[in-house]
Image (cartoon, rainbow, N blue to C red):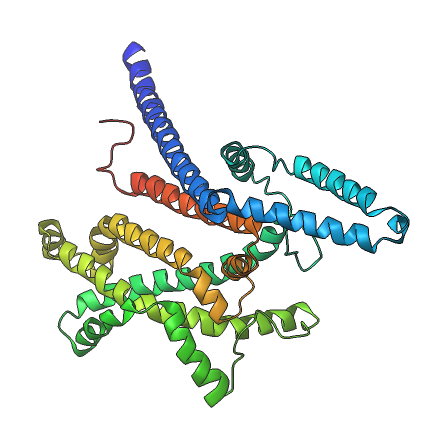
Length: 370
């Protein structure tokens, strides 16, 4: 009974040990990523406020706005100029204290950082959501699904198409199709928005079969099916642009991974045993290469997040990239900081998921150990 009990408890102890190591590894990675986000957001606050100069401009704007309101209000027409100026100064002082602009910028910057990390992003200074909300949180929440839909669709298409085509090319090494993909790999040096401009010129103006921009028709079609059809038509060009800009370099890179693992001794042994080629590719070629493939895909995904601003602006896609571009144009500091915070969280989540998947897929990775 004792040996039997030990046989039962040994796997349990091993599971608990692995779970504890995974928990420690996860906590360390979360702490490191949180610190990275913290530093990035704080630098954004400093840059967006130009070291406090933007807040000084805000004080001038507050004084000008309140002065115009007081002078245009018939209730204050009977006041003398001195009384009117005193009233303006009192209201300006109240507004400055409410916004805490009377404190040193270093103190306010720390407050801005705490609020940004908690997603307590305050109110926009110039912009509003389509529903009229001035809270930065709701402005961003309204735009976030559009960005996730566009980039999520494009990245999933790139990932599955690249794996499928790269695996097929590894079986046809040196063929005409293989050489064509190698020749086209440098075309991925151009970003997605570059191809997007040519796609718009070709399919929206020369051959006008697709819309040049936007997310849906104006006015939006009624009915779920009609709305979905309009959305797909508007997504086709930006998704194609991102697909073209990344597909060839992804196929070339992952084909190289497959070729390297196809020449391993254990693969040759599996072929000598007479195992089916599909089983060999799936078990002995594709599975060992999942870790570097996912790493490459995650790095590509981070690059696409960074290029969202220009791509969405080219296609007039109402996502976070377009929002950030508009906020920079309006010098709307709260919206700029809020958008950068969301992008920082998206990048951190991408890297964190990459670490977890790497630890789960690659048995050589030992989490929680030196």
